[in-house]
Amino acid sequence: MYKRFLRPILFLMPPETVHRLIVALVRWLSAIPLLSGMLRRMYSWSHPSLGREVFGLHFPNPVGMAAGFDKNASFYKAFRMFGFGFVEIGTVTPRPQPGNAKPRSFRLPADKALINRMGFNNLGADEAVKRLMTRPAGLIIGGNIGKNTHTPNDKAADDYAYCFERLYDYVDYFVVNVSCPNITDLGELQDEDKLRHILETLVLLRAGKKVRKPVLLKISPDLNWKQVDESLHIIRETGLDGVVATNTTLIRDNLKTPVSRIKEIGNGGLSGVPLTDRSTEIIRYIRQKAGPDLPIIGVGGIMSVRDAMEKLEAGADLLQVYTGFIYEGPGFVKRILRAIAGQSTK
Image: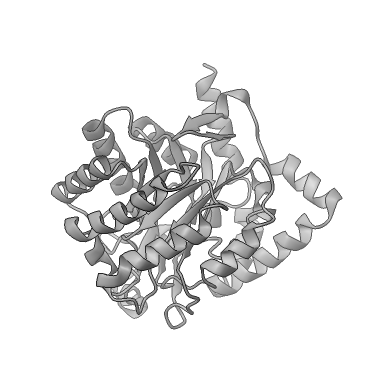
């Protein structure tokens, strides 16, 4: 029903407009107990085999909502109805910022893809904390943190530290985002020395806390193998707890969308089907290089149940979806969970 009737109507509107409409609708539905209960029964799926123990946390199931969908921790409670085992909020920056100029989100229906250059638009860490104070029990929340656009890279560690300190008591794990392609010069923070400084700053702050919370690094799919090796070396060296693979890509190879349209859209991170194979390739490489003990959250181009299963087979411990949820609709997570449960009970 979603793909045949609702999606064609929604795709007539700009992506950000649709996002606001869907969020408003889901919030309204979740506030009505009878409707929210009905939606939960329709779209949730539970099975004992779906539980996962990863970096010291218990996940009711391995499929989460990727960062970028709920930037401000404003509707994570409502979206529990769709079966997510965890939600990653953000990217959160210390100070509020509007992000890049609109339009900044574009669909590529021929490729089942999106291009976005949102630019870490969010209301800031303090506002996210206010909204996380009423988080429900039983839902794992990750905090994806970044720097403000106008913060120079030599001061970036201060921004990450601020978000880390403010969110520490309100999220279950952290993801350090230095790989988003939509922030000017952010990619330079993937340089070995700069990245080590940021991660060592956070690990040092964590050492002073009573409760140890996992810290993961989100990497770009556009890294070469030497750069991936360097990232893994830093993860081991600094004592990080895992890796999120991968962010969106700047590569535009082999798209079905006309070149003229791609040029018209301009810069931005590409997600969806064109990212599927590269993300899985990186997950497989990391698992082979790092061995069985490094937790991996697999994200990027999960557009079908098969894509999800391939990422698990490649070595991912947990999965995150975003673009696939937009294209496949509210039943997508349930389909993935049923397939995982079916595979686990064979």
